[in-house]
Amino acid sequence: MRISPYIIEALSELGQVKESEPLMHYTTYRTGGPADAIVFPWNNGCVPKVVRIAAEYGLPLMVIGGGSNLLVGDKGITGIVMRLCEDDSRRADISVLEDGYVYADAIASKQSFLDFAVSAGFGGAEFMAGIPGCLGGGIIMNAGTSEGMFVDILKDVDIVDYAGDERTQVIDKAMTSYRTMNIGSGNIITGARFRLARGYDITDMRRRIDEILADRRKKHPLDFPSAGSVFKNPEGYSSWKLIDEAGLKGTRIGGACVSDLHTNFIINADNATSQDIKNLVDLVRETVYKKFGITLETEVKMIGTF
Ligand SMILES: Cc1cc2nc3c(=O)[nH]c(=O)nc-3n(C[C@H](O)[C@H](O)[C@H](O)COP(=O)(O)OP(=O)(O)OC[C@H]3O[C@@H](n4cnc5c(N)ncnc54)[C@H](O)[C@@H]3O)c2cc1C
Image 1 (spheres, rainbow, N blue to C red):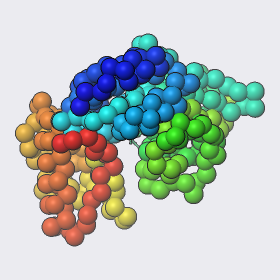
Image 2 (image 1 turned 45 degrees about the vertical axis):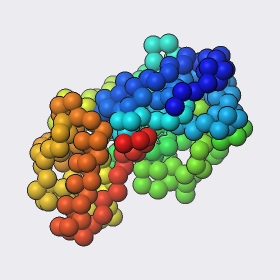
Image 3 (image 1 turned 120 degrees about the vertical axis):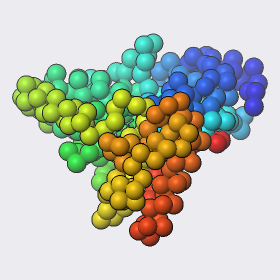
């Protein structure tokens, strides 16, 4: 769908805009078809204005961060995609507030946030080591590991709702479920305040982070594009084990492959399309169900048209 030049012009006042832009450039899978328009807002103040333009003209609006938990259909996304992730032209604000909380824009990469926290002697964010993407996506996914997750350190988040209204939402544990933060559908996070512990030993933290990264390099197929673990762990089970025991290790469809190293990773081994990856996701789910009677639910979000 071609978005009217008038709307493109209005969006261009709020950020850089690219039309018919392939989303493969913005996903860690390196797959995904074009967005009718993708906008990179200049700053947080532009986000509600983009939302209002989409609402006013009845255009679907999808927010993405680092694209590290996304499988975007090869036929792309209709409407406007808003990318909230820092890049060479937009740096995130991360700062210590007077009350001792740490503020960060949602576009901050987890890596920048962790670097900031560690250099300032704040502990508690080390679990983010090696998790790609930005803070907004991490918060919505309540991303984490056995070392910790976003909800453990979040005080509150700044939200823009589907009407373009802004508010601050206090976060508590009851708002989370497995890899989900329930802040209300359609809400966009623009910033957050974090509760981090002061006075941590910087050298100890750096050592711990190095250990985490070394462990991840050993266990994860980081030489290939992926979106991390594809399936959530069903209650009482590990998805990688179910997939392994179903004999699916190394199974390929087109350029997509179940990783030999970590069977809950489906990697883009050789110019895969999103359809290859989706077909393999479906095959894995079907095979595991036939063998164990357990339905695997995807952690990776599938968006757009396949
Ligand atoms: C190699 C690898 C390892 C990984 N390891 C882990 C891990 O250990 N633990 C883990 O939890 N995850 C892991 N992941 C998955 C992924 O990195 C995390 O879920 C990450 O937090 C997603 O952030 P993102 O910015 O890339 O979000 P995206 O993938 O861009 O988006 C994810 C979801 O968040 C929404 N979203 C993004 N930004 C915003 C915003 N500002 N406001 C509202 N909604 C928003 C999107 O609409 C989408 O629904 C891994 C991925 C890879 C590729």
